[in-house]
Image (cartoon, rainbow, N blue to C red; front, side):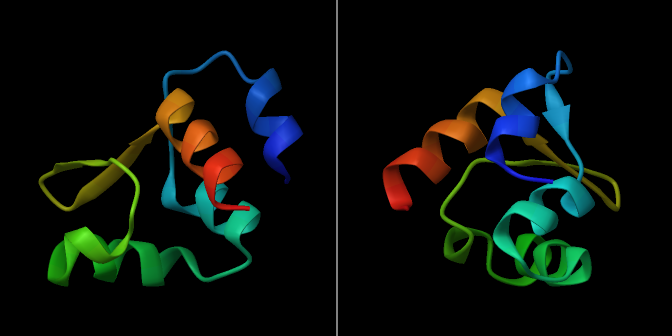
Length: 67
């Protein structure tokens, strides 16, 4: 999956797996960072219980600004 695939989606939130495929890292790394050091991620996310959801539009903007 790449940023263009995310732009074509119509859902509001992304999963750590979807974000990890764009960032070329492990989904578990995103979950751990969200729990242990949230500011290190650099992009917005919502933590609901043990679930991490990333706002799609916000993440796309962040990727465009940081690549």
